[in-house]
Image (tube, rainbow over all chains, first blue to last red; front, side, top):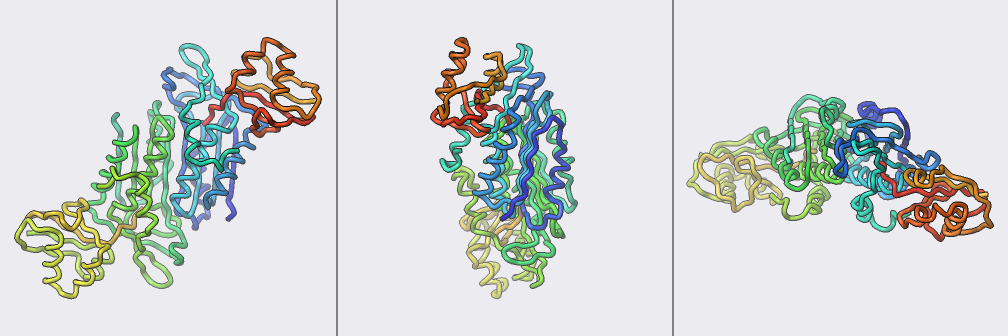
Length: 158
Length: 158
Length: 82
Length: 82
């Protein structure tokens, strides 16, 4: 099936209502929309965070996200996929990332959205630097995020 | 941890933007919001659908949803949970059901939202009657929906 | 007195939203089904479908569950919400 | 000529956004790391961290990947987006 895919990496905030409306617009085939929204937390890895700077590798970012989304499309019947990742300076409670997936069926939408987030966490070239009371600290990659992709099996390894 | 839970069964449509805003309002602890939205599809089980009537067992519906949500809370650290299920006459592309879960961590939010939908499909007393060219037809429960709860293990059996 | 309710296609098949039964309690769900079939013998096939679910006081139960006087007992087909 | 890029804490540790290397190609990623350490011996500890990831032409590769003349080679720590 043909999947409609849209991927953005941007400094600007995004509007979830607008993105959700786009998933529904002229869409009579899909029974399920799942979305994930990632926010800046006040407390991370035990540190009191006041802000976050997101660095990325511009030439690679959208390509890496596109490859993850393409992998998801080979595994599940998906209708529309929207990925937005912000870069630059963010503040507490700001939206960082958004992944929305629509499908005719619930299981595919849930699983694909989860898959895209797990691989985004491991393979998309973004790095977070937190502003904290103790200074600016690069966030460590977590073992649990690495383990999260194990559940998807070997065929997803790039 | 204390989870803020809100469950509604209603004839009226709901506004995802408003629900999403409520999940974020004064929320600096959560890094993840996952939501599921279920829509009326034009084609279901091979039939051309023009509308849907949702019957329910009013005295039991919110209780059943509350028990499913309570089960989810015993399994994952969840911060806010919102469940809305519509009843009555619906049309193509209408929103039927909404489940939103926030958590400090992505894995808990994804898994709990998926869990709630799987159990809602199997244990909440709603029944769909489709309006089709061939007349009004009660929707059959699907074997795959029954199997969907097997992945959550025996301890979730009521 | 036990309050019995029917929903969805079962309600249509029985042409009844429910009724009140007077029965010696405690009795199990099977005993209630028997009493309903005695009340209307045409209900036999519909109530004997092994997919029919039962809730007592708004909680799903199996056929061996013991019903007490004053309970609300609902019968319905597999649910299809969501 | 090979274009080398560094990101995030590795960029800060090396105090460099990247540089251009002239090397006999094809060569593998380990050969590029050696050339970088020859260029600046203080980079040794940072480039030897076994957590350091590498992408060639914007695709993740392992240390045995063969680099061609004109390729873009990026080194960076484990990613932490999302």
